[in-house]
Length: 436
Image (cartoon, rainbow, N blue to C red; front, side, top):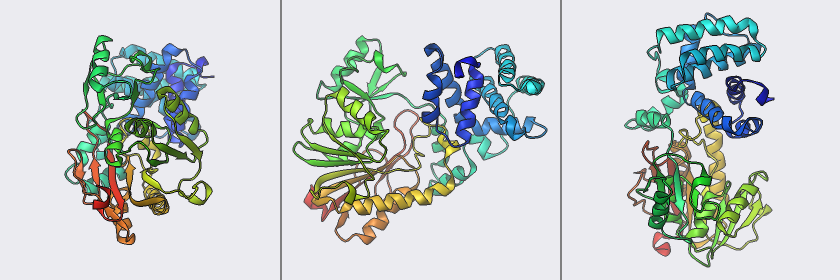
């Protein structure tokens, strides 16, 4: 059980699970449930930090090992990565990091390797961090991702990589059905939680520092939600209104579903679809907390025969499955989980969803295509091909004070002081003027 092992040993096991293909969001909550609640934030910090700097730490560790550890001892490799993360990026006392890591090695049943662990970490402490020898180590990203970003964004690639390595701010969406953003900012100030209005999202608030949600005024009553500024922008182009029939495809965990309903004064008919039965309860929990109503369906959104009743939608939000390369700063395990070979299949899924859902949109209606990716292969190129093939589709002008105009939608790149990376394109069925 996790509680029977030292915290660093538990973190090492989680990092190993991530390297084998399991996301932090899958394995961390389950493992943390066995821990004292006071230790859970520490475990999360260890796991997220080690994943964030994995490629730099791994490069250093490999340089300090005479030969790789055996496969059955791989967990000790990850244990040393956790220790290196603390040596390089934490204020923990050095003696505690070294001594407790050696004890964690023994607790994992690898006592014969305790001497190696001690020697490697003492050398690392004594000699300091080496100068990164490769871009992969310098930027702490997989090499294929660095190369792809450099090709796609020759003027921005290094800034994207640097932004990915900075922990994202905590951003809220004030529920304007319960009060204005300024009123909620004042309530936060009175609670001793400083924040500021977001630059682009009209209801967004960026906190100066993260806090547990149960400290947020009125959170349990639905007065605010946690949502990045980039994700909040979906309603600006969707423009939901009372009385409309709106589809939120690929809806979990429901943040955008709720934002749509708030924007429409909870008077729109919203159908929210997700193919994961396990994720639908999360949408319902958000709806219940915010006192909002939507129809939830478990289905493959692209398989319209399985769920669509034939009634056309006034508007559709299509937030497609993607590489999630725009939210690496929030989910650093993406660096370990994503493969270059994932992108082409994802683009096929995205194109298929767009083509199939287009038939459910009424003439003059709008479809907002969205991803949290920074790769044009999943974004502007999808839209360009769709417009080339679809004679009744038009692209609304991408005029906005945020993001970069790609010619086929707007691309937000991750901003260390603000929003995640995101892409939006708004398509109209017919001529653009029909949707003005």
